[in-house]
Structures are given as structure tokens and as C-alpha cells.
Length: 259
Length: 339
Image 1 (cartoon, rainbow over the protein chains, first blue to last red):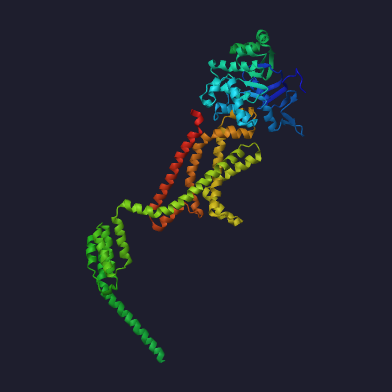
Image 2 (cartoon, each protein chain N blue to C red):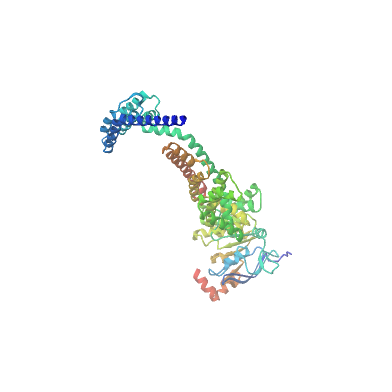
């Protein structure tokens, strides 16, 4: 059942352990359509794990993921044990949620155009012509039309990340997840990637972004969340967050360290 | 009674005449025997010219019943041959031929003198021309085997590699066992088992089938481990990125992971295939006539080392071509890395 004010994504009690370590500890999060959520926090606080759980790259032990009003991804078998849904269903879900990685993970053996075409071509089984058309659109969107025939190895970090964004967008996702998209970049290349993300935001794309760039969080986010030791410690609008939550001792020391 | 006496007399006469003949021949040949003994002594002391002078004293006598003349002249011929005097060697042999025009020993000797006088390289070329047709036939079989295995083993290897990294325990265990078995026992033993061993269990193969089976299984096991290493060397992020755009495991393998292993796999696989060219020699033991077997046959028939040298050259030609081809393929496979 889809209603107007219904969140696009709703997480409830997400919990994930790595051995004895609790990476994510009962996190709840609602993301409305068009909302940009920025998650910050020290390394090892579970930000990436949470993001990867949404895309089923990590299998969570507890909690539910509701996407467009439907609980997704996990089924309970007749012995009462919970496990990931059938692979083809997981694949279908993933194709609706785009993800961008810290290390780009472009396919080095394909040209830039090939990278962006791959999803529509292989996953959505679109024709070569159609896939090419979509890919060229997406490359134009990230401003890399002129690089379409080169291999990723010749691109700068910033260009690689923009291609990775185009590759994710080519699947026409309803939600985009960014896992530290600028952490592997030289400082002078960060701007071009954020410009691309900013443009996406203006088009109304729903996004969850894990980043250490506070400037970007201040400027872009509808909501900033501070995560530590697997839990949300504080959240609010950027104005509220950076004005008021600064009093929070942990946040203050974290921000002082990275700013 | 009369009959009995007659036989005894006949026997006695026969025996007597034999004895006489023996005595006569011994008396007759005594000089020559002494000559031969003296000549042998001279040879033992290394004085070949003295031996030749002694042997020359043997003269032709009607019929040469004792064979002393032929014996002496052939001995002279061999000694002259050893002294590198081909002229005198030939004339000694020709003395024999003058009396016995079809004495095979003299004829063979003259032939080998002739061969000795022809230049070395010419002999080599003649041998090559003599052995090449047979060796090339064998080489065609070697190449046939190599091509078959090059077509079969990467497919087998890929299946084993995918099986090995499967999370489905029974499949990965079977593949582990397969590799353990075929990598852990000699290829020669595997070939013997397939060709000579399996018939006792009622399974019989033709030599070619057995060779393809043995080499195919063995090389699939080796390539399986190489390909598994290649797949696992591709960084994990590639699989995640493929999954993140909605690819299934197999789509990701086929489109993203496996194509990236090509360049990394070329050097070790090229290595394996060069080893394969040489390993095909092992199937000569299971009644396959390939290059090694052909060379062995030629070598045994003529006791001529040229057959082995030629086979070595053909093997080297094959391995060299392979080395170059694989270098080219390696560059092509990695074209995306440096452009």
C-alpha cells in the first residue's frame, strides 16, 4: 500500500554482528522520497555496514527493511530460521537501489560506455541500442560524454567516481547509496564528485550518503545523522545539528578531529 | 652279418677321411694362423702398419677355402680405415670384390667408406630427409593431441575452479578430490591406468581416446587450480559492484570476474601448455605413435642419433611458437590496462 507521505525506505531494528563485534545495533531510519540523508561518524561506527545492509551486501541478523511499503529481502523458512530471499529476488531489489563505493569499483576491462551500459544490457536485458542510449544520457549527466571510449585506467579519481555514479544511475534506481564517495580522492577532485551528487539532489533523487565531508553535509543534507558504535547518537537538520548538537561531547570531539 | 660289417667299414672310412681332411687343413693353414696371431699382437701394441704388413702376406689360393684371404683383406681395410687412409682401405676391400664380386661385407664397407668421405653436413641432410617424413607424421599427431587438450582443459579447468569456490559443500569437495587425485599422481601412471588398467574392469579405450582422457583430466586439474587462483585474485569490490547493479552471481562471473582473469591467467596457462607439448611424449607408452615414438622408432631402426636431434628441434620449434603466441595474447588480453 503506497500512500503520499509514506517513507521510501524504512529500517527497523537493523542489527548486524561480525563475530562478537556488534557493527550495527538496532538502528531505525525512515527516508522520505527526495530526502538526502547524510550519515557521519568515526570509522568502525557501522555506517558502511548499515548502507551495505540496505543493498543486501551484508546479511542482517535482526530487523526489517521496508521499501515502498513492502518488507523486502528476508524470508523465514519452515523451521523458523530467517535467511536472505531467493537470489533472483535480491538481484531485482538491488537493481532498484543504486550504490557508489569508496573505491569506485569500475570494471577495468570495459570502456567507460561499456561500464555504464552493463546494467541495462545484462540485468535489464535491454537492446544494445537502448542500453547505449541510456548510457550516453547518463554520461552526459555526469559530464563525461567525451570519455566514453576510453578505459577506466586512464581516468582521474574524480572522473572514475562520476562514471560509477552514471553506472548506478543507468539502472534508474529509486534510491542511491553513497559509501564514502570522496574518501579515496585527492582534495582537488572532491568538488567535481559533489557537484554531480548535488545535481542529482536537485532532480529529486533520494539519497543516503556516508561521508566525512562536513561542508557537504551542511550544504546538501536534509538530515544529518551521527553514528557511533552501531547506533544513531544524534540527528537533525544541518542547521540544528551543527548549531545544537555540537554540545554533544562525542560529536564535538569527532568534528574537532576531522575539521 | 655281411650287411652289418659293410656299415662299419663305411663308417670307419668316413671317419678316417674326415680326420685326414682336418689334419690337412690344419697343416695347410698353420702359417696363416700364425700370421693372424702376430697381426693381432701388433694391433694390440698399437702398431697398425706392422699388422697390415703381416696381413698382406696372406695370398689368395684357389677357392680360398679357409677364408683367410677375405679375412686378411677386410682386416687390412678396417685398419687402413682406422688410419684414415680411405684410398688403401677401399683398394683392400676391392681386392676381395675382385675375387668375390658380391661379398656383402666388402660392399657394405665400401658404402661406409663412401659415406665417410662425404661431408658431415651432407650426411646430416641425408639423414634428415630420411627421417623427416616419419617424424612429421608423428609431429602431426603431437599437435593434434596438444590442440585437443588446449580446447578441452580450459573448459574442464573453469568448471573445476567454479566448483572449488562454490559454497555448496558437496560440489567443492568433489572438485577438491579431483584436483588432489590428478595433481598428486604421475601423469604416466594415470595414462597406464586408463589404457592398461581399466580394461581389467571391462572398460577399454583406443589409444587416442585414452591419451585424450588422461591428458585432459590431468591438465583440467592443473588449470582448475590456476583459474581458481585467477578468479580469487580479482578484488572483492568487483563482485560487489556487479551485484550492486543487480547482477546475479553467474552474470557477475561471466561478464565481470572471468574476463578480468584472462591477462593474469595467460602466463601460467602458457606455461602449462608448453609443458603439455612435452608431456604428450608420455603417451608414446600407450601405443600412440606421436613425435617421441616416431623418433624412438627411427633411432632404434638405424641407431642414428640424428632422429633424436631432429625430434628435439621439432619440439623446440613448437614450444618457441607457443611462447610467442602466448606473449601476443597476453598483451592483447591486458590492452585495457595501459591505454
